[in-house]
Image (cartoon, rainbow, N blue to C red; front, side):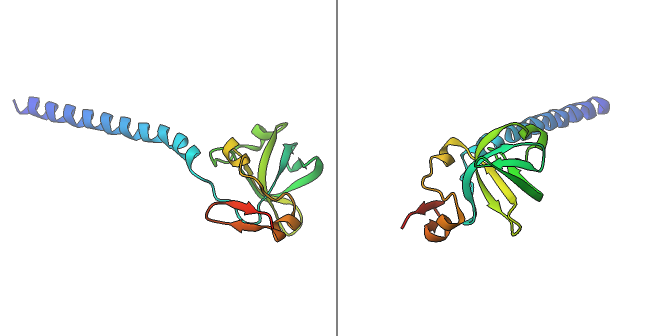
Length: 142
């Protein structure tokens, strides 16, 4: 009888493990969907443009040849960092920052709701003359 009780306890523990694993897997599946609805925060220095990705580090930024800086980061629609090969040959509306050498440092591929936030500066001159509301992530022209 003692062995039967041990097997029953083991089976109960096994069921609890399976149930807790299923609950954890459900949460992991739900996370990407939840992150799509979260508002991403862009720095005040982020400009809006169109990037066409070539062979790294080459890009076309607003139709002009440009380069990604060493260590540049690209964030996709859910803020994950895609492999450079997955971007090759694709064009996106993005927010981006420029480093001190004039190279693109950070890129956020925009979702439709983020693209709809207008106006957004396209040049450093616009960013210097417009007012930025960091809390609402909105720009206002003077």
